[in-house]
Length: 283
Image (cartoon, rainbow, N blue to C red; front, top):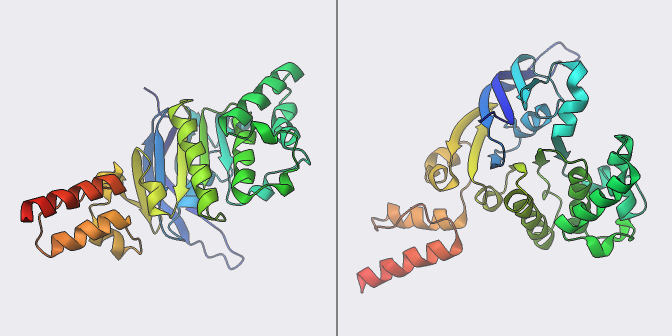
């Protein structure tokens, strides 16, 4: 199976007025399979958002290669194909909403791609249904909550029918309710509609919901695997300024105290079951 996203020893540096070129990405090589749900985790300055911008050619590598569905992002003649393949959702939904009515905003990109009106209507309705916002089709976006606005932004990307959606810290500006709404939408997009989802985040609980977790620090990939495995490396993650989910942290502290508990119980239910078994064994 071909990768939807592939980076080969990707390097990126910003050139400053002084001519200094700090390295932001330092030899990143990853492959992301179609239909997967991947989370890229890292603290501020780790390079995760810069990597995200390479995934639909907002940025081009200064070294190495990036391929989108087999297309070299350096090929300017294929830029439209790349951006039809990979849709981007950013932190602030207000920066992506361009119309005064929700359904008009979602129709904006397909209209600019020359999609026939009947097909646009179908895509708008489907995208609104996918993000659970059908009842707000004729509402003004500025009257919506932060979580609702972000779901409209996601719907606008969905209407372009990309194979892959990259979300660059989409919950960073949201309250817990809005974060939960957006994460539910992301899971639905991946599991029920089969879209490849790449979630850039610094929230441990969000990263834990992905099928695969890539951890970045100082422009390099330092861990790559299923969340249950990656989060067991508590000390390594703390050494690069990251925490772990509260469930893992609790179980790790118990293990450090000599108690026999698993470190792969990520969910609240799994953690509770592990603690129940520990108490049962101790009784």
